[in-house]
Length: 422
Image (cartoon, rainbow, N blue to C red; front, side):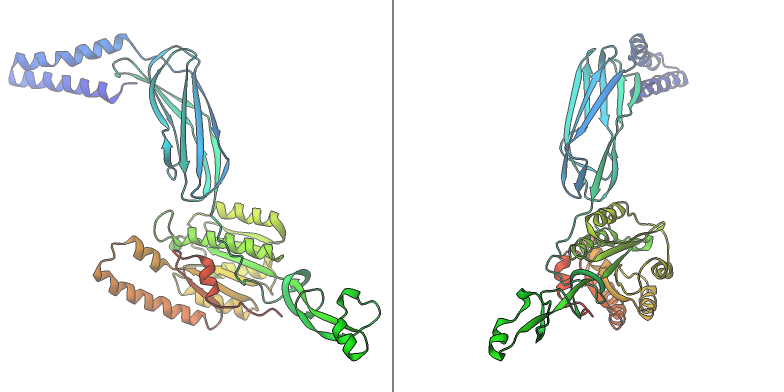
């Protein structure tokens, strides 16, 4: 294969020859000879076909978004000596190189090795493939080239970062018979004091109220609010119209981060959590308990990409058929259309409790823009429209207008205690 330099020399020689004949100038025709001589010399020493093998190692195969990953690549020459060889380790476009380089131009003897080491970072989540390794062998004059591809791929899963919501009072209002950490208004096993009653045979000794028993001269037993668990279903709006901003700073990326933090917090409170994602396909994870459920949700959220035009009516259809009716629905959406209002009203009418976490697209756009004075009027108008929609939604649901530049835990604490369990 000829390189651009070879093509340039050939074009220059042809141009000078045509110009010399057109102007009938033998001096210009002579100027066309040096490029031809260089091309002739290059053809005498064609590039050797590269026969290389590559081995790549990663410091970790799973990382959080924004974390550094070290990559080490060793290329060994198992063919003839190469006077000039170019090596490139192909990276996904989302990656940025922090240290080192993934590109080198060297000479390799037979059996020689070339190590490459560099550090990459991905600001966005995803399931990425590093590789393959592309190699190009050049002749001494860099006029000819032989390409080869070394199919050495490495998988790197970049998970979304997780919000710390340990101090957030986020819990379902309706509970189920299973033991958990949500206080219910039914007597049972728990830690919150309810009252006292007379002792009956079979009561545990540790529940006897000795002060009341001594004062009233008979045994009394403490009663506590039973602690139960409930169901939470997280709905992530990842439709195409929800993508506003950059690849790393948009409502969908922030919504995925919020969904993972909410799921981790609710599961740690011994509740069941399910997930529904609106994207190219309407994807969902049935409710379940435990750490394995968090990994299932994490796997689904890692592969979320903007796309699709699924209306909220399809979400309601999935909820009524595959999820319990007495669950708390946490809708994470930038609320770009008024269809969300009708959907929330419909879900409330069917007996669901709804809470909305809305990453503000206005805050994202305003920080990414030039912030010119004439844009402030447009911002005020859009802010009034958004406030009007949120005020209507707050009549039927809890709504958090979240600026992603601030921690989600702070935004959730501003609305106070979530619905009191029953």
